[in-house]
Amino acid sequence: MRLTCQEQHAPGETLEEKWRFLEGAGWDGIELQGRGDGAFRARADELRAAYRAGVPLRTVCVQGGPFIGEADPERRARGIATMKELLSGIGEIGGRGAITPASYGVYTTSLPPYARPRSPEEDRRVLLGALTELGEHAAREGTLVLLEPLNRYEDHMLNRVDQAVELADAVGLDSVQVMADLYHMNIEEADPLQALRDGVRRLAHVHLSDSNRGQPFAGHVDWGAVLATLADLGYEGDLALECRLHGEPEEALPAVAHRLRELMA
Image (tube, rainbow, N blue to C red; front, top):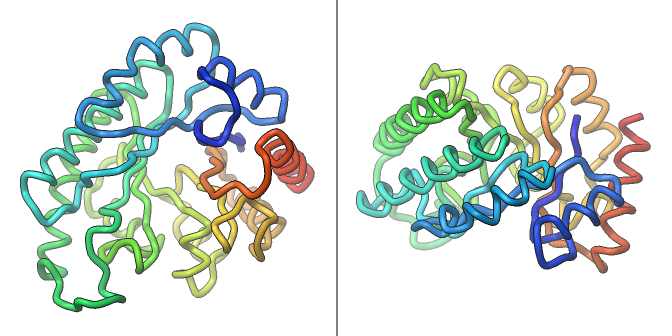
């Protein structure tokens, strides 16, 4: 298992500077933020330079939307186009894949108003179509679509790991896999460890964030049990830090990496 850190958490002005800090702090790579409408493509020179300098740019997480499950067809098309851009871009710099939820902040069934923008059957049809299109694109690029379930207050379509696994299975492409975020799992899963076990056949990425959205050890997630479960499952993917960092990064990031590595050992 590799420990990676989203770029915004690390001190430094450039990716090379961020990586020098992270490498010294015990991390194995960087997860990028991927903004849409051409913003990630506009970083191509910066990303290629970092790649040539030896910075391990492992994954990219879509940021800001629009998303692949949008109710509005035009926004949904833009969300799919953004993901294609991320899948191609991360492949060019030696990375594994691009992360997307179905949507974020578009609608929730848990807060008013309670009228869905479309039926559950239509949600599924839209997501299957988008994931099939993206999975075919990812296969050509040698990368992975990493589908992320979010909690019920952030998305109404995919909230649990088993839902994402079922959808990925229905797509039927090896280039469409699932990622698990311990923060969202803390809200949605009756048993997060069992959810990891049940979803292992599609599990290709994990986000590290504690129960309070802080970094590991800032909340009440049992990180020893999480890491032991992943090890028992033979999980060999990345563990990427995505959180609200408590404390200064110069102190927090080395401390988190050290404690995680102690448990991994």
